[in-house]
Image: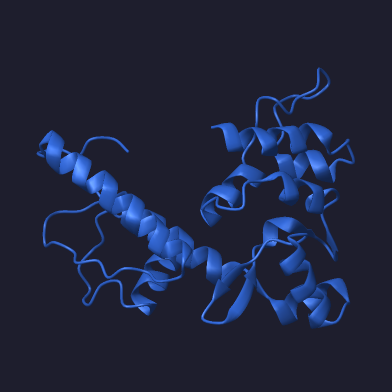
Length: 198
């Protein structure tokens, strides 16, 4: 976390600890209420992120949202947008043409990635391609640390990684792209295991 303007080192340290606690609260699906200020702001949240935050009572009025100095608001917006854009267990079952009990079983086995929200599962879309699960997903999920923050899991799967590039590739691939290309899952599994050492 970068230091915020007009804060002392002690204040910054306190904000870092508060932000870490807030991320953990988000991971337990208990979004925090954010008070906004009436200062001039940057509009860098999407309409969907703003709507998601307002829907859960993150702020009470139409004051524009300031995210340039509050990474928690951006994180919270991204988390709520992720929940909204994810599939329910029933939707995932229809997509894969299986019974919903099979989806729940795969979530317990960690061969699918899901977030529990108010007693219901949400499955982020990155792990699906057309009507199937991306190849090697179960092995990669097994190698990933089980305490990773959900947004970090999604980012890790969809952002390019410099270690996933062959000489024939124009640019590095994301773990998701690598697996979808039909290449061996082992390099992605190694990267997933390495995250435990970071």
